[in-house]
Image (cartoon, rainbow, N blue to C red; front, top):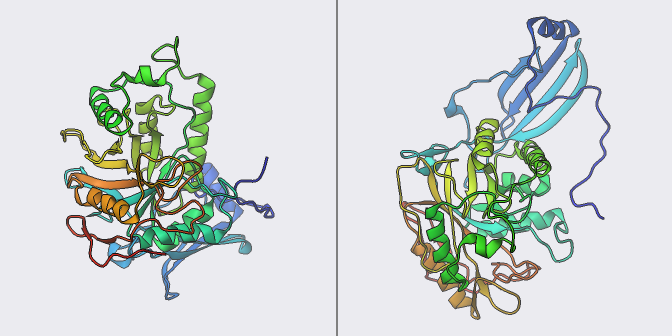
Amino acid sequence: MSIYSDKNFPQKPKYLLDEKQNIKLSKNTANNYEQLGFMLKITIIQKNNINLIDFISYKPNIEQKISFPLNQINLWSPENPYLYQISIDLYQMDVFIEHIDSYIGFRQISLCSTKKTICLNNKPYFMLGVLDQGYWPDGLYRAPTDEAYRYDIEQTKNLGFNTIRKHMKSETSRFYYWCDVLGMLVWQDMPAGDAYNGYEIELEDDKILRLHRDNSTNDLPLAERKQQNLPKNESPLPIKVFEAKIQFEYELKAMIDFLSFHPSIIIWILFNEGWGQYDTIRLTKWLQSYDEDRLIDSASGWQDRTNIGHIRDIHDYTKNILLPSFDDENRALVLGECGGFGLMKYGWSYNAYSDNYLLTYIFEQLIVNLSPRLSAMIYTQLSDVENETNGILTYNREEIKFITPHIKRGERLTISCSNIYVNK
């Protein structure tokens, strides 16, 4: 057993401020707080050291809204990762008790254009991202240094991507700190509670897409999902045990509480490819009410629930992407996983190539042929992992396998194939 995340051992303060949970106080209780003489002072400071907000509250445990003109705010985005300093001071009877320094970013993520397009700060924004499993050759789940996190994010931006999908793993806070500072949007997976067990019935539209993907990519027989994924003599729809549900939902809430303060995180992904998927409608509605500031991707790939969540997420590793019919659902359409083109030296990938130039050309063709109906594309993947060689970076991060594409974003995503070079 070893320590995975960052650890520190601060001195426990006399009073704890809970920024997330709102404590409902009766009139008498609120008056008691005033009698105790607590005062909370909040200051939000711009980069030029001019205060944007000075706010004082004598009821620190009651939720209070601060309003100010939007035109005064420098909005956060990958192109402008503007962060404000926030300073919090707690007093009792004019006696200083505690001081906290942190940062805050203002941004809005929403659906617009008849609710079928993802918008960042009220403007349509195409998210071109990479899947990142966060593995390292020496520490596996643990990055060797804080600088290693920064390097991965900087390389992702240098390659023209603006989004990272953190896949089946939640990172230490330092990873998200660098995404906030450097300007990288994050789709955050909830790690699966167990392998696929067929807890929910597959919809017909998903079945058609799956058969296309499986037959084109892996030469699998056109079989029902239960024939591919369930052990023999097992019920087609086993029941997920109650204890497993409780544990999954406890860890889901804990992850959101821990990460919710990072402006870079804009999408929560509840389930991936049906792994342990259950009670999708109930959990999605809870998640939408618990965090109203982010979009919810209920099912990334495969087991979609009609018109549930904000996003319709397709996985397709073929060269000819097949998208579902565009119906009247108020959800954005995204390609949550695709590509997987490997520079084949060892290991495994969805599609293997032996030449840097050919590998890059295939990737560029994938980009050029994207449907304008899509709001996002997530390419698999940022780096090689234990047995998968379809990363843009090698496992040790010493080599970039692509001939660096020059990506230009406009109303339509295009690729300039001129003046490409090998990045040694």
